[in-house]
Image (cartoon, rainbow over all chains, first blue to last red):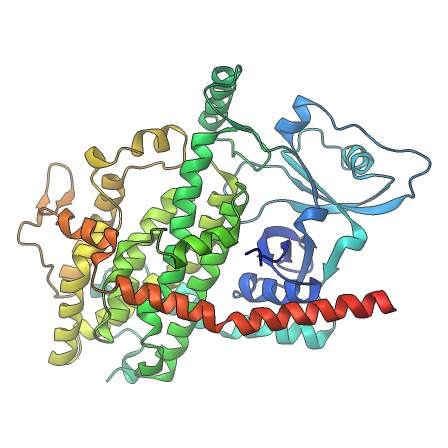
Length: 186
Length: 323
């Protein structure tokens, strides 16, 4: 029985000055459901101000290895209507909890042409992974103050999810006689 | 985009394997779309899906105590922790999916009992002190393993592990804090803490899996950078960190052979009861049946939610077409 919903890639923005970054995926029946699920799965910690989702099937992806093996055939016929594409890129092998970062938009007649534009615009032939997504296929969380607060403020108040909350961090009990928390245990 | 999973009968297999191993040696991450041996993919699916199932089943032993938490503060902490485990299961299913296996197939394997998950979750949680000891020892053991796996050569698994480690540290700290409080609390609290340590110590040591000499997968897993340490190395790190802290808290460990070896700086443990480990893995542990039944029940009872979401999405699609 095939009941699996489509897979959506999730992009989270930690602060207004940072780019949206790919953090993982969720399964959902529609964009609204995908955004809500993304919020529940990926914003249980305070670092979040905005989320985007895009269906995995709408994302065009190339790794550096794939591009070295052969550049994709670029379709740029005059018959194709130009459109906007969002460009994401991974540049480092360093250990990280995020994958590709949003770098900007390009206008092109096909995803392959968008890739060429992206390489030219963002001056990077060495990127490890490129993701190209048609702009109209990316769904964004509501930027209103009301949504911002109801979605992302609760995680900020839950300080007990931070390890710094616990007095015993990183050293032996002998150094923490009379640590916090006794009041509700006894 | 065709997935590129190489098998030894491919004409260019040896050449590609050499490139692949060189990439790993250079510290590069393998990403979805890159060439990889089919065996690398198979081992990763096996490990990541078991890991995902462990997070999901891991909600059950502690979840049972949410309604009986001794204070609002402890209840909120436990709710957040159990919620995290659900999220960690999701991160890991996502990582496995990048290897071309469907989430639905993995969940099906869990619900039908074909899939394995960490044997430690097949032990019962008898008192509130178990919640503290699970955080300190079981999550402590898990974090040692996860920190190692965060270095993994496969990008999606490594990223899931980095995210999990960052969140999981609080699970470990809240457990440790709770046990240390009990250790200096009333005689009854001390007895509860000691009893919980006595019951969870050996299952925690078994979490890292069989000794290296009995672990046939280790060699290839280390060569391909899936693991960067062996089971025995991770187990030793866990013991060296936790034994001195437990002893210093005035608690004891249920291992008469446990001793400090000044020549290596290691705490050496006595023999592990692998017969018990394999019995639990094979489904004969104290709680295997109950855990699986709880998962199946939750899946069946959630069916109406999935149906409602599907119906809502279908309605919106119809409306969109009408407009």
